[in-house]
Length: 597
Image 1 (cartoon, rainbow, N blue to C red):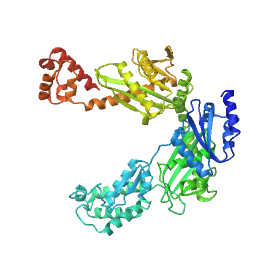
Image 2 (cartoon, rainbow, N blue to C red):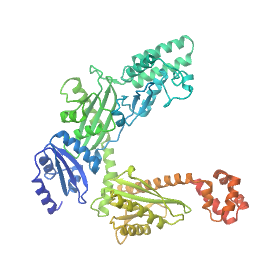
Image 3 (cartoon, rainbow, N blue to C red):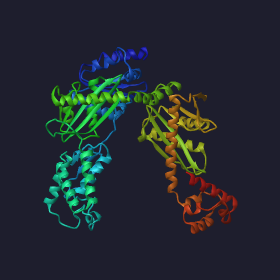
Image 4 (cartoon, one colour):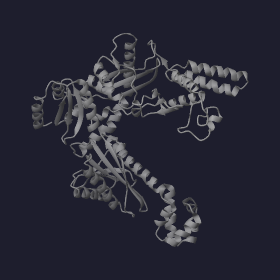
């Protein structure tokens, strides 16, 4: 931070009020890199620019050249605004706080004849007041439970009613709702049994299975009895989780944390029906004050991935009143008793999780954001938050495609990947690069969408020149680098700057592995798309692409062989009997390559 920036920030800080609100940190390019909130804006903003910082906070502060703030009237408004601003700007340092883990739930639909389904997208379900139970550790556990209940209770299985009873009716797992009038009381009783089970009371179904198992044993139907015994074991071992002596069956989530070496470890216990049914853990580098980090994390936790329980228990550092106002459920901060012991247990598990994973997390940091920082320094770039990489693929000049992958702060951003079907119908790498770069960045200009800080082309000097020329014609100044390969087709050097120079990269360094990982990602993405496009091609389109095969020969081959498989089964000699030798060679080589990929 130079003296001019320091003076600018100092002057702005003198005008910041001691009121609640949100702040937006900006880098040299004017991009929002962090969004936070504070009870007293002046105190919080000032804390960034005094004293020393470590870890991610130090890196954040080193990039700040300006800030903005918004004053609000309450802390609840501040939290709402903060989360909305994070969604809007997707800041670089808030992205580390994302946790896209989602859990499966079992839904008992509210239809005249209900069904059991496994759902993940629970946001759209919240406002419909549907009956959702969970979360479950994974989809397999949820599906196994649904299968168990469907075997025990003859619920409806089909999405829409069939015209006549299906297989489930004939094997006794459906009452034939599509063809017969079923007593509503029968359906209601089944629903109540299933709800009791999903809420954690397994006694009714356990008794039902035990009684049926004994009956089958008395009838000497030992195979059926063994099957029922396995069902009973599944309930006792898999579904009966650790019981918590809490004195009621209220659905609760318990949050605990552990903070060390700049990393925050958070542990969540899901208690359903008086039992711990699942737990969730997440570790990330801390940037803000502990209270703000914890409050923000819990608020975001329920945005899309987890259904709100009746009660949430949080540690003493969390503002429980703020969360209660924001989430609309009871939030408590216990200081003694069994609930406090649950918080303590969650904290202990958070510590264990961080102790076990700390070295792996550090190494992953070095390989991603650390390697990204190293690349930024090597290329003398002010910022390097977004990289776009391109690769081309074709088969003898046909099925020309290009792929673009995006890395943000060292990790793939798969939602930003793009595919391009090239209009050129012949093998021209430079023409392909010219087309894809123009199409991509003309669209960026037109939509005013986010621009990359760096473009990497999976090719040499020629492709770099083409890409730079197209960008210049569009009035865009984005650095373009290339990757040079050795005789073994492995990445050996980085091509950069103007005039272009070759930069040696230590093949054992994190930077080299980072470049190689990006190169593999874009290559695999493009090849996958190429295969998709090619698989849609018919035998006719393949024959059209072979020089020497005209309309007459094409019709004869189509009439005789019909499919690509039959044509591929022919040897070169067999093809030479029906085609001129050069044409037969072209077709044979084409089909050989087609088969390999």
